[in-house]
Length: 171
Image (cartoon, helix red, strand yellow):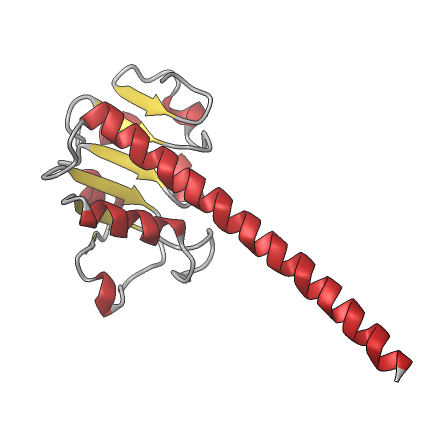
């Protein structure tokens, strides 16, 4: 029947566009992951034995969804490289058993204490409101923040104690 064929063609077109969008978003996520790992390795050298704090684990702010989270993928890559991963997310209170190697911290300060670097993974407003001058003392010196999207640029730009890395920023 012609009507069914036209409907099938529209459905294929719609699904094809959605699939292309999904593939593109996955490619962007993988490039961001690669950029972050490269920046950490460039600044810290061998990552084995290092500690990295992940700021945010959720897929996006205002949710506790970990499915398809770039932060979780980064955490798994870091763990595979021998990194101790400490994380804080304002709404994630418990991790699934397959992520038990991630040390989930109750506060931002706890997550960054003793870390060699902090990585902004989910752009929570709480991170912009944090007392970064005080938090700098908790990170190992120098206080390294990897922040691909410049989310904390305004908060960190005048604080000399931070080495702030973002896409398009200093190498």
